[in-house]
Length: 167
Image (cartoon, rainbow, N blue to C red):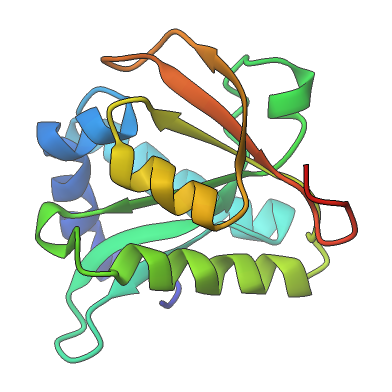
């Protein structure tokens, strides 16, 4: 993982244009302008909040495979959800099912837990994304509630901070 670079934008935009990828995340595909706004929000998040998302890259080729990190989306799901940083991860189809997501999310959570931002995290995952729901469970996220959205509804999850008892 590394910070995102301007040269990552074409791959970032292609990832978010892929309807099979975005359906698993529970959001519609984005056009290039929407992806550019998201790409810039990530850069601004690092400046304003001290956290954001990292590029997940192939160790050998350096190819952009996806991204993971924490962010503030302010989705309108209530203070218990919107008041905490949201963890997220997304991989291009070619990178899915290879353990890359597990490795990246584990590294991201280790960074968060060792940082000034250690604390509870939330996540939003489409009910149809069994792989991501399983990964979240392995990483300590537990279901808060379900909400409408995506193709099949969304699970809102919470991971306790390192000083909280697991719940």
